[in-house]
Image (cartoon, rainbow, N blue to C red; front, side):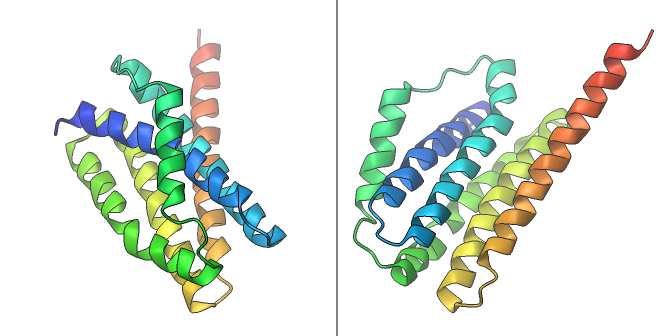
Length: 170
């Protein structure tokens, strides 16, 4: 698969993931679990947002939002009804291939795209670490997600600073 095809697949996966986690949150009785899954859905949105400039730069066309949302709902149905521990055990088992795909994208990425690609990989690694910590009951799962949020915030701050500096140069 080409670099552009992999980028598009990754972007679509993040859109699908937002629907996936939102649908799982909708079915939870526990407020804490519901909030955590909504937080995960929000991370998918933010990660798609990080990838979106590359999608535009390379004139890539994602499938329709409706189609991606339907796929997210179908995927969520495969996890519906699982208690929190088994749900996270499935995440820990099922998500590593996505990290491998993101690492493959990094290896193909041109230098100017690498920081974005690394951030997307970090997102998947944080999700896997979160799930594993939840299964182990360490209470440290959220720290991985918050670490990823800090990386996003740092990246966004750098982008703003770079844009501002470029705008005020004579």
